[in-house]
Image (cartoon, rainbow, N blue to C red; front, side, top):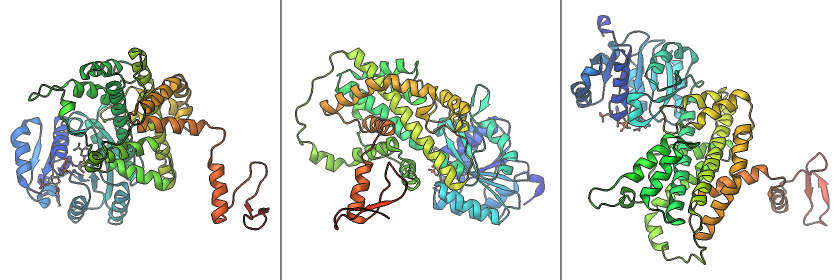
Length: 480
Ligand code: NBP
């Protein structure tokens, strides 16, 4: 390693689509970027095609790469999550010195990040698990970045990351999230919310198609119009784009020639698993994950096609009014998905002692990321007003919006049900809302049953203590 060559402010290893776009983004912002990839071809392609974007240092070996970096060295890893990330971390760590910073910008599971941070910290290295959202376009032009890890490393790293992140109203969409796995945890929940958001949009589209028989082009126009109102968001905007696309080969809307089986890479599933562990009902996200799984059960679906629907209701007669109902149902269900996601973030923060600030997340999700939306400004304001909000649904603005939407929401779920159109996320979000606001829940009966078969005991509404009914011996109640 020659010290004289150590001129790069940041190194990027893993130059597939995400890594190369982030490297270019750094270079375009005036940073000297050392480049490394396991196979040299990707490094050369980047320099050949985009070398004029800025100052790149081409390296072939990991030794050369580490030697090209100014101290404290900062390396961003953008390789496939899982074992490849562990392999690259190990290789880097063996060449780095105390105080150097390793950043994992991949979609790593937050528990892996906790483990890696602890291991690197023992070796005197700073390990930062950074969630990065925005896909390839965001990586190049400004993603939302959620870095975790030691606070001290953010002092050196923050300005670099903030310079390449998206900005909204002059504020960067990047902030230090919290220790060890906090950044990847938050990115995971972000992706879970993204799943719910997309499922809800899908249900809204399906209703306009099946309940109202609207042509795809008209549905695209509806989404375009919605994008100038309360639902203004990246996902609604691109829904209009995708629905407007005509397949060149068949002349049909592209959406009609795409196989209706949705894939997943795992972050939605991770969110739901974590929610189960934390005991947080993220029903909207769970329905979205299960809806993708059901869509992909193609054989089973083929065989179930003939199942009777029962008697179905007719379409709503007032198209405009029902479209408006769908708009409100989408908005209210979306608030539920965010409320649940923020509940999970609060629970994760308590479980791992992260001291997460929901308002900060709403701020950095306003731009760059896939769930960017005008409505995040409202979420930010809600947490600024009351950082201890028990639920986003109880923030005055959202409470009023959802209360105004609830009649529409019920009409949408009822109509969908009577017409045999599946709306798992709309329906379960409405049930969550009704359960949350209920005076009494059937959980009292559940407790009674648990006490009957397993002597699990129960509490009473009218006095302190824990009780058990002697179900098999005269059914008298005793204090347990
Ligand atoms: P991929 O996830 O497809 O990974 C490809 C890269 O990993 C290549 O540079 C490849 O090197 C390298 N790699 C592999 Br595979 N195994 C390796 C190993 N054992 N040692 C060293 N390098 C190895 O790339 P991507 O889609 O650009 O995503 C990068 C990361 O960013 C992932 O963690 C992904 O989940 C995350 N992410 C992606 C998106 C997105 O929209 N795509 C968004 C946000 C985050 P090679 O060229 O030598 O094969």
